[in-house]
Length: 417
Ligand SMILES: Cc1ncc(COP(=O)(O)O)c(C=O)c1O
Image 1: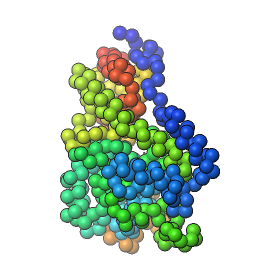
Image 2 (image 1 turned 90 degrees about the vertical axis):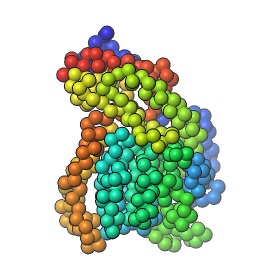
Image 3 (image 1 turned 90 degrees about the horizontal axis):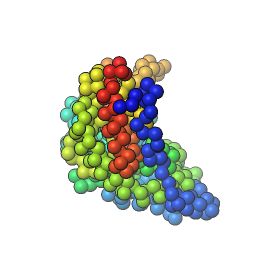
Image 4 (image 1 turned 30 degrees about the vertical axis):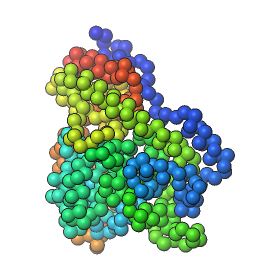
């Protein structure tokens, strides 16, 4: 066997995997149409009749089994808009997973509410419903479950808890475009769902976001927060709610319309690739796909998640393993480095001059985000290896390189100590 690429040997894989983002004539044709139309802006409410954005919203929402879609600037704005639409604000608590991208939490702070972190389930990496139940107080107003990596959270239990305690559910589906839970797509499993179209996501326009919902009132409030607090049929200069501008430009909707057409086939390819890889991983000790809980019919596979056990790799750390895997030409990374609670921002926020929102007079709870321990999320952050979604779009013969690279590293793991 040749020397590890990490030590200067020839990588197992020398050609690139599938390139990302993908585009073809459809993106170009749609873009040209918008550019020639000289309507580059989606109207005073952000998706006025006849705009590409209005068409995209309708198609995206329908695809996700939801009645309304509200396009916006990015996935972070989508969560903030959803929280504002639900009336969440100062003094309220919102439950979020300890393991997610910062936007899930920072959107809560944006509306002056308090994020309450909850640990995750090892085999799904999604928020733990038992943990949710333990932190519900009379201040809790919402839960933001994140469909982690593309696996859908345990929504039946989360919906039960939300009903019992009268909580709003905002699914953060930034990782889970097109994912299916017990026969239903993400998007209207709770009250609202949010999506991101940032470039790493499974459909993209570089930046962009969407909120979906089945509730007309919430949809109307989302539109108002998305576009300057305006009402339909009124002047541009009459504002009914906090006048934010989080609109999506027409050129981005033009790209997204083409991206959406590809999503279903891509999801099928990714399910098949994941199934193929799972069988191959059976032949290697010490590295396994995150198994899930059997409730997700179609995984969005933003990240193909692996659990790495160093003891089967001569004790080399996960980080060293990922370096060696990349050197062999296999795109991979470690995902989020730690639970959100460990971010330095929590020191300064609590020590800020005025301390809002934590010391806001409306908030009567006690906040100690940094002191909380999230053992499952910590473990996941130590053990996870992420293969990005576009790799799963490769032909099966290409996927074999992943397995070959891991076997090569395993056989020579001692040299990496
Ligand atoms: C789970 C999650 N939520 C929200 C976001 C925010 O999306 P955006 O980058 O479009 O603001 C992201 C982006 O990576 C994400 O991963």
